Image (cartoon, rainbow, N blue to C red; front, top):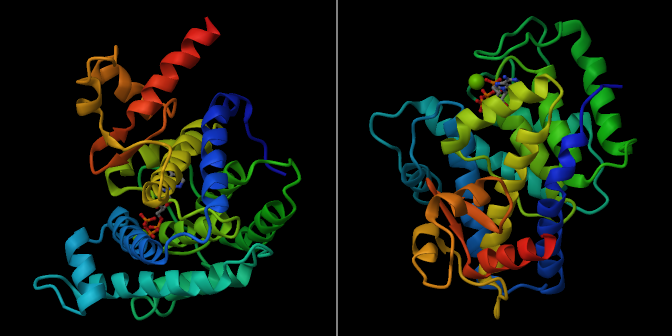
Length: 318
Ligand SMILES: Nc1ncnc2c1ncn2[C@@H]1O[C@H](COP(=O)(O)OP(=O)(O)OP(=O)(O)O)[C@@H](O)[C@H]1O
Ligand SMILES: [Mg+2]
């Protein structure tokens, strides 16, 4: 089995606990108000499609993606391929939802099916098929394994996910799966989109919302993958946790009587007289996962309550 360094992940435990608390809060609030639920689900699917395709180089923006999906409009100046990428990704999400249930165990065939949907009508010769030749990843610090190893490596990875021999937390397990799959790079193309679908299948079967890696974090994401190639999962776990916290917060915000407080831009929170920290420091705490926060576009949002709790906890430690 693979070797990796998970020691520094201990630092992320408070963040993992916070996310698990939020998930428990959501679970205990079910059934959630139906209208809000539908809206968030639609918003998340749209963002997921936009961001995942955009990371891959698709040039449609969020609004254009929405117009294509919700109104069936074609966007002037954009290729047929880019339109297919949008439709296909949405179809892949629909398919994924049919698989989500608590007892779900990862199967190779589901990874192939997701990949098949992602590349349908775009690269039909490769869609749903493992590569039979070498690949390179631009900017990566390694070359993916030889094509004749792919099938065995995939089986090994699927066993690892299903048996969880190290008893890892679900989010950490999913992060390792994410990295190992793109490291194996089983396909000629579409690896990134496929793994970002499959990782969410793993999270959603446990009742988490989908985690969406943002286009604006693309550079950070690739750096984190390079770190993971060297055996260190800290950065990739942090990115996954941040992505997940953002989606959790969308649901938390919609809860009647939400006890977490209102998420506001950090600038407006530090402007309050009873907050003794400046914008830079609170932003740092947010980026490090030390306070309840999430990114919206390029801005971080947090709550007054989260900052105040941090102050109290710090005093306790001293
Ligand atoms: N340094 C790296 N180490 C490991 N994996 C990487 C690295 N850089 C990128 N990747 C992964 O490879 C994916 C790109 O592979 P590929 O082009 O087959 O997928 P795609 O779906 O077409 O594009 P994308 O993944 O960018 O959406 C990235 O999304 C990322 O998940
Ligand atoms: Mg590609």
